[in-house]
Image (cartoon, rainbow, N blue to C red; front, side):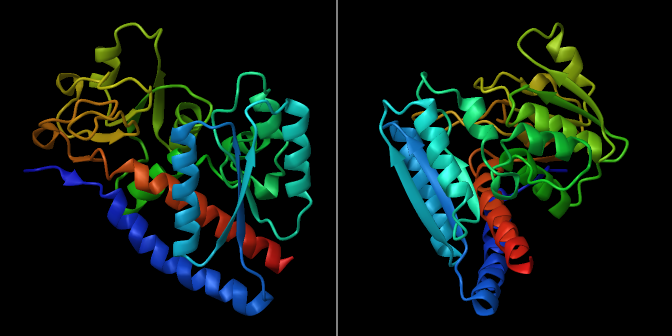
Length: 284
């Protein structure tokens, strides 16, 4: 039997239709439009593309995007001042600091300066801590998007062994914690892990989140596993993820394609969480 495709593109489009109605309701009840502020420091072309895509997603659901662009030479103090200004702007409901920032900036200090109620990208240490403890907080967008995707397709999590390959602060670590909160038994693997194929081979759910093209080989994955590939690496043919997916349909019970799986859910979750932030603000 062929594997089920976890289609993030289709789900994101479906969620957008719901968000259009929610944004319209906010406008009707408050007379105000939800706004996501995006901060781009420097002239990195990939980052500029991501920011533009996020702005387009805002417009599709009827939100507005406040685009803040700062020079490559921006200091930590200058960026902190801008974040503080946005924190105190009642018209701004969410703040996104595009990663990465130039090397001279203390990125973690700037992430953590974002007010919790406006941390719609789920990047603050406070937000991570609250999420880990089961308290109210916005989850980091890629892993939270994955959780929405798994829920939508009815993937059973409780009691399953999940192996997360990757330990970044905005993907691997929050992914592992979200799966743990969903009653999975979780193993986190990384660049120093010994016997990686053995760990992956034990997984009921495999999440590729290491940022290395096709690091996880198809041959390592056990029959009937759920395969979630959170990576994307451009190629002449289009792109590959962190997991070798060619022929995965004959092994996995379900999998996320690359592209069209996890990627669309990341931006969709950012917009969804900004709408939630605006709804919470309007109810205060």
